Length: 255
Image (cartoon, rainbow, N blue to C red):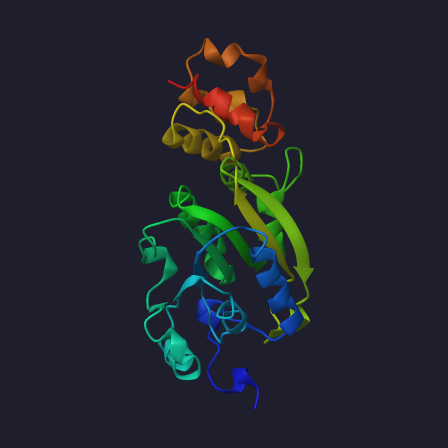
């Protein structure tokens, strides 16, 4: 009997069972490029990745899963998980380890962007992330200035992590097949984070700039700067034309 016949897949939680063993192995291989000794899996579901992750040597492993049925199924089928599952929403937990750790998962698509922002909150502790997202989200995270999908998520993630788009995943690799294609990306911490006035100011600037992305920065961000500062030619540009470093430098001129 196939594993996905043994429990219910819940659309409300964005659940799609990854059935392609090759994709599971590729994700775990991509994770092993990074050095880590503690690992958190987000949304293990039916254990498509978990069974490979548990084979990694000398790794402290934990998994966070919100679905009661999946928690019971995982504990039954993987007894070694008895004390390693955090039965909560990922968005509500504290860091699962005191020291640095890696994150991996076939992330629920309905909260994937929120997952990234949660990881940004933990940025100083996270040593590597390998995650599967809806392809459009994965492309957005990895997008460069000038790209039509370059936006808030692109800038905020790339301010702290190097983003590598690794590979596409066809919808037929899942049961049930999602209506969208998927993509796997890897995040590795930058060795040097751009200097910014403050993290809060930087986030405010980026979000404000892209909130009216068709306008020039002068019009989109006029509430954040004095009239004199707005005379700088950089304000003739639109948000999508600025690099992460441009935003970081510009934050020092905010009110």
